[in-house]
Image (tube, rainbow, N blue to C red; front, side, top):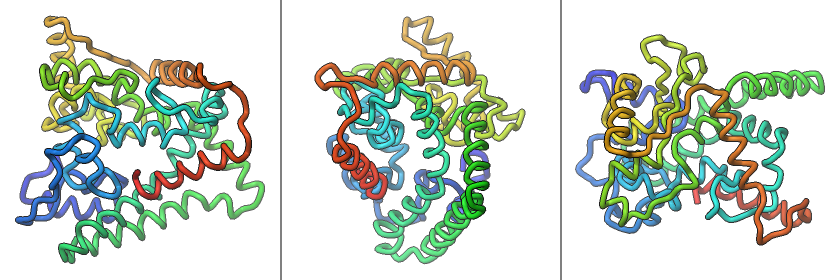
Length: 331
């Protein structure tokens, strides 16, 4: 939507809604005189979760980037922490399962789960759009492409799990492939983690005094990811990612700049921050990203007010149920 000519944006948006990954459709809505956001002037927690899935139409431009440094009520925080299964900040409620995030096997499972859940999240997102926007407003073309998107996501999910139909051999093959993948490249969970400094939150009132400074200091610029599959391996993109998982600091400050141009302004942003004494958090390469992710998860794996150890089965079951509920409802 940022790189195609304006007259064709609607066509490409509909095509991507039919075959694309989660997040498509958040940026643009059908031509309509009806305002899709009616709670923009409410508190962040109300404006963010105006729609059942949290990230409703135009949320990315009108809510997330406007109040980006106030992370406590941001839907991205919930996604990055996987509904609490990963504890990434001191203010986050401590769960019993968080004690396991210090172990590599738990982090690998989190990465596998985040990668495999993309088709399911795409289905949930499109169902939510149908229920709160397209069906009530009778946008028939959008209803059609959303339905196609649900079918395509289900087909992709089935294809990704075909190995399980081959018995124990298939399960072992899937496990080995996933372990190798998580070892060689950063998972979606790690990439999403590289968007913000999640344990450094600034209140909205303070942010409004110097929006650029505080958003620069609470965002991360992940660079050197040109070879990662999420960056499509295209030389002209220079490691930029269509979901802005890389160069997110630059994207936060200039959300209107096409993602393909973010690497071009990265050095300018870094130089300007240094000139004015503003913090600029830069990560270069997947190894440094993994090192920070591991360090943060290990640091927040324990809580001084709660004994560390394996909890009861009841506690674990309750926490997993809450996670599934969050996944399905966005709350």
